[in-house]
Image (cartoon, rainbow, N blue to C red; front, side, top):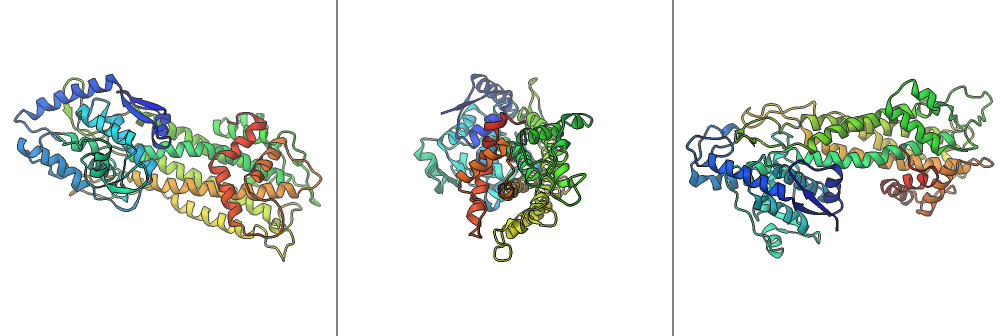
Length: 512
């Protein structure tokens, strides 16, 4: 099994995906263990002094003015975890919780949190045992980090609350830890706070969304090419020299992908109208511009994620010179903004794909295709209601594109009076990514059927390969009306699992 070694300098996106989705094992480097021990010595020294230090010998948030005596500090750390584990609503997905736990471990191992090495090792042990704390949908304002979600994870470290075992059954955490030989931790000064104070949930969801959207943007270039071909559009608008004079990198990449998919097609440019088209509709002609803008948004979001993956987000932090200083690095604004940007870009990509699908089904705009791509229009409804489903998905995505980060609601007796809502931005982006997959699956379903209905004209080798692969995956071609939901589900899986991109790349080579 793949092993990810956590050091002091952060982790990569591929590390997060390996642990969250691939079940990779986690180990602490010798460097990380040494940094943990060194930072802990500083915290212990400060804890022994009579002067109050925030997070070490004081209360938290609006209660930070109270100095806590030594005999109450273990209780304080235990209490902050219990009281902050106040989430409600549906359970969060296992992969999200694993990403959250791993990213908190990444910050702990930086040597800036003051957590003991044995606490960090127990965090790794939980991941390696496949024990996943029960985390709920609601509870994080994205400042001071993802408090409630992280608290539910810390509660499991203490052997309290509920968790999911490797068999998928939810049981008391104490039982699961005992079965795997993991001793619950008793938190000491600073440790409870250090386990709660980070942007790890929203960052984990950003990393996974970026991975999914990478595939989906390439998928969208392929479905757009299929639709252009089915509509007998022109591929001249994809010429590299046209995109070079507006040098947005994403636009150029999308145009190049579409051109590669359409290479040697006999369908492009065959206008069957009485009055030949001078230009294709925007949803066809401007596909690279819209998808390309989304690609550039992805690039910006990836830069933010890389910076955050290298960061140590905690408050207070232990500095190399021995100081323990308060800060505001836990604020989720940098991550929240790009999560919202991605939801906007995804909604627009879905919107343009839906417009192409509608054009394929409208006999007045499809340039010779039967109404709704039906076998016997009137007797058969064809893909009429598939487009309704697509339209409903797009409409929801437009609502999800409203930024969560533009909102703020004060908390903690006005101490935390401006929050990021980054967790909420991440949660709605996950829904948007799922919906975008379904929207592209419906465009794929319609466009492949439409291409097959263009009798006498030969599609591009790459689109032919896509059609053959999707048919082998259980998505049926043209014919009389049938129970449509299974076909759409199969098309969704074809896109979601990366099979669409793989089928095209067998002919085109790697797409951008």
